[in-house]
Image (cartoon, rainbow, N blue to C red; front, side, top):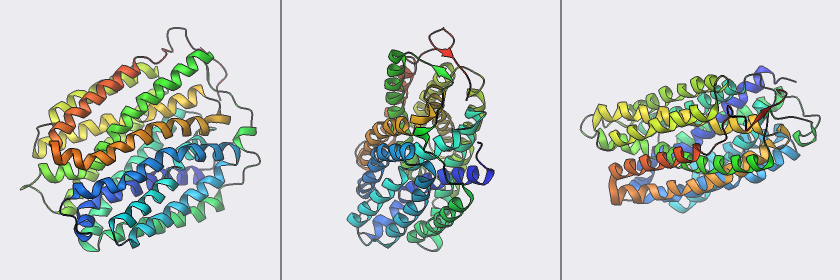
Length: 396
């Protein structure tokens, strides 16, 4: 049975909220650091690493519960839990309290990806497009985090940047449970088929390659989404210094880059995954190299460019899961993959402040070009659907 439109809309909105909440702190970190008595934002940034660590490792139990207990119930917990955790973030009085509240926020945030995306895809006729639209929603959440937090910091205070979306999350939770029918059986009890059959050896290879590619991609995602605000602030010094305007510029970067996911989603439904994925990853490398020493509006244009490529690479992992993995175990497979990739990539959030403080953004961007090269090497190891190593079976 197809999901009703209201449920699909709320699942996409949930993806937006998931990313919005995780980026509020990074966008407001300068103001928070000042209030908590830190001389530099870089010294406060490591306190948010726990959120991203739990965002990763929490995906394993979340995915298991999604398959065995039910996805509807887990998404309800997601909406209410993430809202409550954000309210705690707004009430903290020091750095360690913020670290604990952000860790709780990360734990509830971990529910969405292994549960919400498989729920959205379980009856999708065009999974690539569905993934693309969902990705657009998630990354628009990042854009809203930038502009909303900038406005709140300027006119109300950073605490309001947590409170406003928390209230919206509570409303979404109530509406979601009201409009989404109860599941008659858990996904693990349903009989499903993946659209492509792989031998056990190729499936194991796919999972390993997919995980390592996801780790490198997640490192880039965390470095950029958590550091872009401060990068803009540094490279626009003397040109634009108003926090609300800088937030609006950052929102433009994310809004434009988000459109890439819809385009890539449509292409995934028509062309082989491997070639498309490789082309997008390779285009990241020159963008980072050129941005390393760019300033002002040149940096802004290149920032849009490398974020288009980073966001454009996001749909591929979910597309591989829906293509190769039975729906009955998708949440668990997705959870294991996310736990490894996001768990390791949380190191990027911990290291961001100290790395920029000691080496500067130029060297960080050069390091990201190297990470993109590693991603390309992993993508080359994926099975090629056009060479006869995989066999199509009945579509979902």
